Image (tube, rainbow, N blue to C red; front, side, top):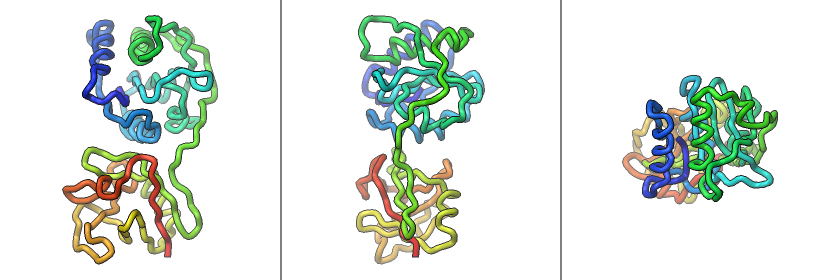
Length: 257
């Protein structure tokens, strides 16, 4: 499960209780439950990097900003044998693009008369149906296009690159919405200066070793490559996100000399 419920409240317990009551042998895995409320950019990063590696047959419940409206419906997306129960709020298109096997707009009626907790009243019901072998054709109407929403990632502006923060973890590392490979292609061997607030970074570190500080980087802010392949701003044993005041969706600038 991936959600913005947090761990303080009872939402995860409600959903797990319903799943285990219907599927006693199920294995429910928490991917990330403490995402920022309504933060689609953060949720996209987590789903891309944490969910796609599960085996075929896995059923994902993704509950981030899950409100059904005239412009966004509830979906099941099948991608490489996995099923993603989610909302067509831009997250599915940002994760999968056109690379999905099937997608249906859920037409199954939810349980209950109030529409305040889709993950409990509807997503659980659909997950049980999928686990029991119900075909997608009995769950919803096929669609061939996902609702596209422009989510900030990175923009090549010639002499500089504007890159947005995609995620900040519990250590305060700030993951940028550009991979190392993409960065090197744009950089094309040119020297660079990453500037955020009053800090400047002009080299790429291969670890969290801070090395020797420089006058322009006294706190020894690091730019490195995370396990996801994305560029990452970090501080050894401290929070780069807190120092810089960064959260998902904030921009940083990289200048090329």
